Amino acid sequence: MKRCGTIAIVGRPNVGKSTLLNRVCGTHLSIVSPRPQTTRVDVRGVVTRPEGQIVFVDTPGWNQQARALSRAMLRRITESLIGADIVVLMTDVFPALRRAIEERGPEAAYVHPVDRKIMKRVLDPETRGRPVVLVINKVDALPRRNHALPLLDAWGRAYGMETMVPVSARTGLNVPHLVDVLAGMLPEGEFLFPDDALTDRPERFFTAEIVRESAFHLLRDEIPYAVAVVIEHWIEEEGRLVIEARIIVETESQKRIVVGKGGKMIKEIGTQARRRINRFLDRRVHLSLRASVRENWTSDPGLVENLVDRP
Ligand code: GDP
Ligand code: MG
Image (cartoon, rainbow, N blue to C red):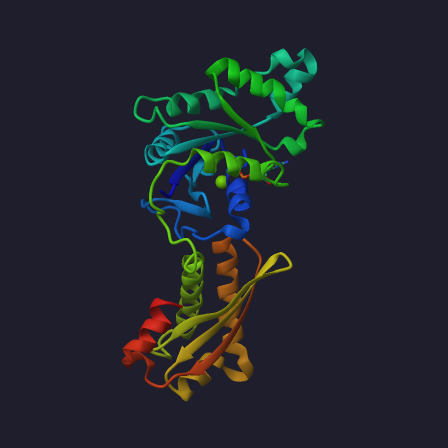
């Protein structure tokens, strides 16, 4: 029987939720939601391991409401909790807590008031029953790692919390252990996402779409819809993602337009697309573009499937 579960990562703004997602997905990253603002499930990362598939869900946009734990924010937390099998509540060792411990000793440790509010929501009748894992992030910023212990105690006292994992999302410290813990808690169920060949398809797909959009944007009506983009090379190299894509058109004259005088146009398409891809994938990208002609590809169903449906 396979295991698969959805994990909602909740927490105050700036505790490091996104950093954790990026870290956890890192090389395994398979799915990135293109438009976090849309109402559909905000799938941010899928990790597939032999023992099961973990679907991490974040609720983006909280940073915009960083000043207060607004109703809207609580509503989003509730929404993401409802769809989740497991809750990761992330907190950190915040400055006021550090000061309190320095001045009055470990017993002075306390749960952040906003974390209490979030916890109240997590324990709501609507969402109760889901296992909760407390993650204490940014332990790299502590003079000693055991300085997180008073905070663990405070949470244990307040909520009888059983599973608490200190990590550093930034350095990766203890993150593999966290993933092990979560993998061990997954409910039985079929994988929600394909586990092998298609793992990076959405990223590639949206990347190709961005290149295509940039071409359309810069060329306006100069070439018709007969543009397709194929991703030919996609590899991680020295901390950046190297992507080679090919822009496919139907005629030589279209190709000349795409390439432009001395390659000026294709360069511009590349620059604009790379900027957007950087933002979309949230990492450093090297993009190179080429153009070529495939006569009549728009009227060949096989080519259409290859070029459009599976870039
Ligand atoms: P989010 O609002 O919860 O998604 O938080 P982010 O992931 O955007 O991180 C907020 C800030 O905390 C950023 O400046 C991160 O670099 C920083 N941060 C995240 N994780 C760590 C960590 O493990 N250690 C330290 N020192 N800083 C971290
Ligand atoms: Mg974030």
